[in-house]
Length: 136
Image (cartoon, rainbow, N blue to C red):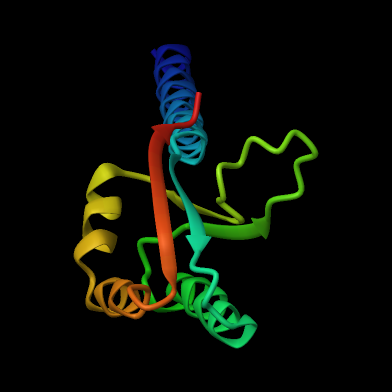
């Protein structure tokens, strides 16, 4: 009888540890899947010839500041075209914004800070191209 009790207690402890281990593994897997799931929002700008360097720099800084002001933005980077292929069709600036869900992207699109940023572009922007995709 005593051996049976020890066996049952041991089995109970083993099962509990196994369940805790499974929960921890599941949490790590979910976290990895969430990190891998990234919605990319790519924005290309072409500026008017009349746009001054100071105006262009103001746009660059304002776009970068959106990543500070809007929590849904998970990552942000930007750069200038330097391709030797001459296929940029006048687009000089590439901005790369990362979200973890379409809901986060949609929240960003209507966010007052994003709307305010969009309003400042009219006088200096010649053209814009936007492409969104899920990272594969």
